[in-house]
Length: 304
Ligand code: 0X9
Ligand code: ZN
Image (cartoon, rainbow, N blue to C red; front, side):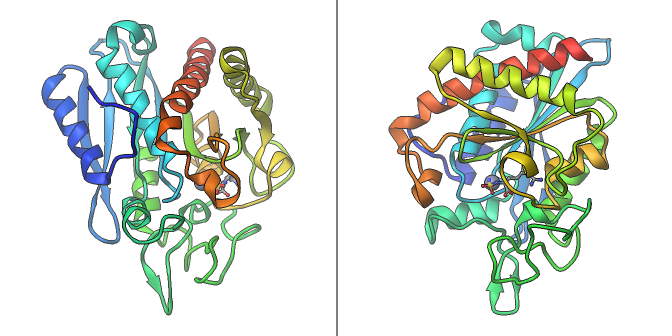
C-alpha cells in the first residue's frame, strides 16, 4: 500500500493507478482523458461501486499548477482511502461515484521535479517564453481580469480560451460526466482557503448559499479535527479576482452545482516555500484535508 512520506513522480502515480485497476477491477477504472503538450497521457481514475441505481459523481482534480505538489499528494490519498481502505469508507461510495484526475498538468509537474522546483504553468512555448497558466485558460469570462496577455507572465491566459490541451482534457472530462456530477473540487496550494465562484467578479452566483454551506462543512470539520483554520468565501472576495479558472467554468458553463477550489496548507513554509511542505508534513496535511473532503462529500450527498 502506498506511503505518504515523499512526493511521487508522474510515472509512479500512473503506475499506482494501473496496479489498482488490476487489483480491484470491480471498483476501479483508469482512463486517458487527453494528452499533454509533451505527449504524456493525462489519466483519471474512476472509483465506483457497481449498482443499478444512477449515482451522483464527485470530480476531484489536482496539479493544474505544477509546483503545488501537496495537491496531487492529497488526490492520491483520496484514491488510497477509497480503494485500499474501502471497508472504512464504503459509505462514501454507496450513493457516489468518484472521478479523480491527480495531475492535470503533467509536463509542468515533471519539470518542477527535474529542472525548476517552483514552475507553475504548462510547457508549450509562446515565442521566447514558455507556458500558460491553465487556471486562466478556461472559456468563461476568459481574459477579463487577473490574467496576463504576456507569455512571460506566471498568469499568462494562453493565446485564446482553451488554447492548451491540458485545459481541454479537463473540460472534456467535466463535460462527459456533467449530467451526474454535483461537486467539482479543484485542489491547489497554498493558504488554507475554500474558494468558490466567482473568480471573475465580486458578485456571487445565485446559488452561493448552497455552495458556501458545503465549503463551510469542510472548513469546520478540519477545524474540529486539527485546529487548522480555513477561510471560506468567493475567490474574488477572499483572495483576488482572476478569470478563466476551472472552478468558474465548472459552475458557469458545465453547470456543476457545487464548485470549490481548496487551497491546501503550506506546511508552515512561507513565500515560494509554501508550495513545498517537507515530506514529513505530507501525512498530516493529507489526513486533515481528507477529513474536510469527506465532510464536503457527505454534505453534497445530503443535498442531491
Ligand atoms: O490563482 C489561482 O489560480 C488560484 N490560486 S493559486 O495560488 N493556487 O494559483 C486561485 C483560483 C481561484 N479561482 C478563480 N480565480 N477562478
Ligand atoms: Zn494553484
